[in-house]
Amino acid sequence: MDGIGWQLDLHSTIKPSLHEHFALMPACMRDYDDSWVPMLAAHGFTALVKQKSPAHTFSHFTCTQLGYESFTLECGAIGTDSGALDRVLTPLLQDLLAEAPFAHLPTATLQRYRVTQDLRKTSEDFHFLVDEQCANFTRFGAGTPLAQDGDHCISAPTDDCALLFANSAVPVGDRAGLLLQPCR
Image (cartoon, rainbow, N blue to C red; front, side, top):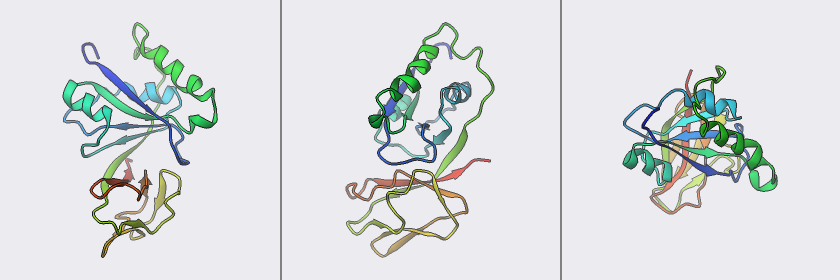
């Protein structure tokens, strides 16, 4: 990791999540150092989502334009618990700022997901056919109708398809959610 910068974009979730703390890796042309996996896992993160297309996020900018290893960290519903930020992030930042932050981490893993489809809202008629307030990472079986966009029905492409960030209130052209597949 010498010479490579890193950037963490901290977010709190607005809806429940089956993974309370999770990380999103922006779409990037290079692979990240795998030492991030035990570092994030050691600090309570349980899932890592690898995005496949550019997103309007600061972590995507810092990865593609500055060459940083960048993550969006979803830190749970910290607005309801004033001590959550300190419990989750302070130890992580202390470890990252240590002399050799990745040197002595226990072996740990995260549930990895890959994005199989960005759900783009292409019309004002876009709406979800499942409960839009369902928890992030809720899984659906193959063929389950998930959303309707005009006359186009979007269904779960495979078994164990997970839905992330369902939000039909975005402007036309923006991403209304992500479909994920757990990596085995």
